Image 1 (cartoon, one colour):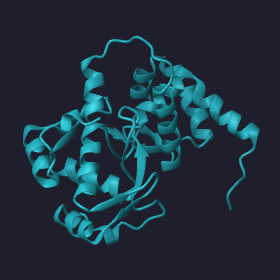
Image 2 (image 1 turned 120 degrees about the vertical axis):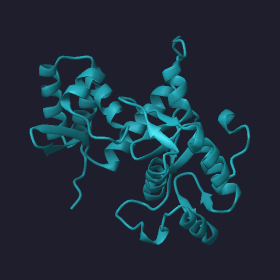
Image 3 (image 1 turned 90 degrees about the vertical axis):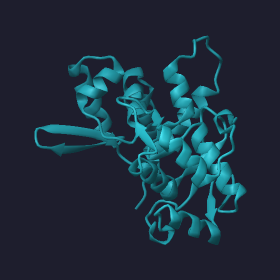
Length: 236
């Protein structure tokens, strides 16, 4: 049974996300990994006591879920729907009025490759999506994606059995990349792709960041596997 969201309910959720400290915590969790209260406090720039109150409110509103491991508690986004909502707000915010802010190494790292909840984003993700469409492995529309027969075979070479990716979430959908303004691959397939490149060591997670580091061996492997063009880093 799905509840019908009233205007008041929408306003309550929006007010929770609208606080800067809570928004920074939610953005940090878009990396796809569960974080402790201490880690989230550092991302938000507030005290542990203040963080505790914020986490309690967001957990009660089902924006966050908490997992207990021994004496520690780890917080994560409660669902893929919450992640989609946060990502949509990021896309809207990035398209707002321009503010002068020097571009630093961290920004460039995020634009090159980063996690978007449970899948890849940034220029690398766009280059991979473009290559899969070019080679006839995927057909992408505004919101959804279709895996072709050749695609099923191709993903099998990467160790991804497309037929086994059956869950309540869509197999393949598109997600608008907030930094590049074009769609990358999300859904079960996007998550499986991220898992695979991390398992193979082609990408590594940056500590306390959504950025993904491209290893030297990983870049050559990705270029070979997906037949990426020489100028893929300049994808726009």
